[in-house]
Image (cartoon, rainbow over all chains, first blue to last red):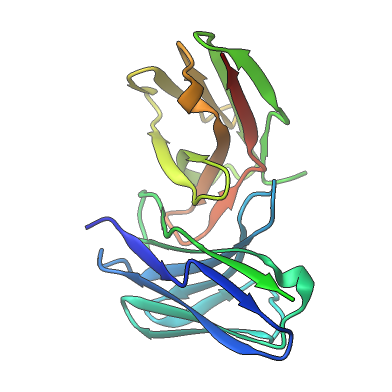
Length: 113
Length: 110
């Protein structure tokens, strides 16, 4: 199984809402990633979890709060977002060390009103 | 200087054409190299890993030149379905850091 799943596919939220994005993989990967992607730009790294511990935070605003409940799951909690946070949010996973590639989920398209 | 740079594009080519994409990277300690393709409003999907000896998969050929820190992707006999953005990705030091190039957009025209 080389699949990364993400829910929901689409999300519309107001600036005062709290919502969560979910990601799951069953490839035994111990590194999991959140990326933000705006139109016509490459994915921009937000967070990396390694063995369920946060290892990289790319100076992301605190209105984005990641969580890794276990080795297969990754959440991104959203609160008090701004319209400029509207983007495609991608989850990915990889081996924690090695030569192999990342696998991406299909993404959540987020619109903040 | 950006860590990974690519041809700015876009490339507009007719069906059947051969097209080449170039990518350079700045970190000489980089160990793994990949080409991903990304369709509009979809996730990136691995097209090819790039090996030192060069590798081919059907119409696609990837080359790596470590001395020049340069990666290339050649697409022969372009199809309409090859229209996408091609992302050069470099993995550093066996670890968690995957660095993306800005991408090159390809449109194959009928």
